Amino acid sequence: MSGLPGPNFPLLLGGFLVVGILAATFFALAGRTATPRSRRRVYGVLWVLVLLVGGPLWLVAAAGLGLL
Image (tube, rainbow, N blue to C red; front, side, top):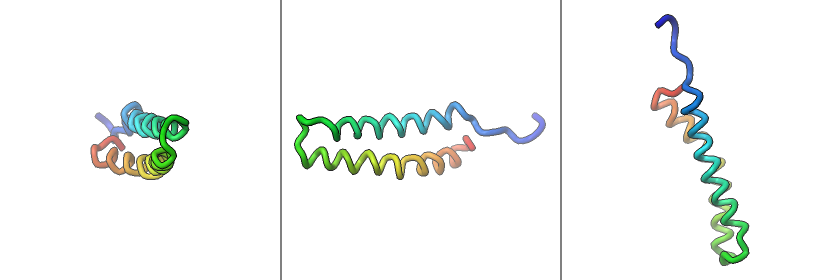
């Protein structure tokens, strides 16, 4: 092998896809009218936190796993 190996893009993007699917699930649950109002508010907070924390956390985990 000549040179440094680059990032493993399929695995790196797969992690972001998982974070996005999880956030989309909480977003969909927050919009259901059959869900009690207090639980919808919790789901609303959770999907924002998953996006704000999940992306950077995945980058740190990917760097620790050697994907970057």
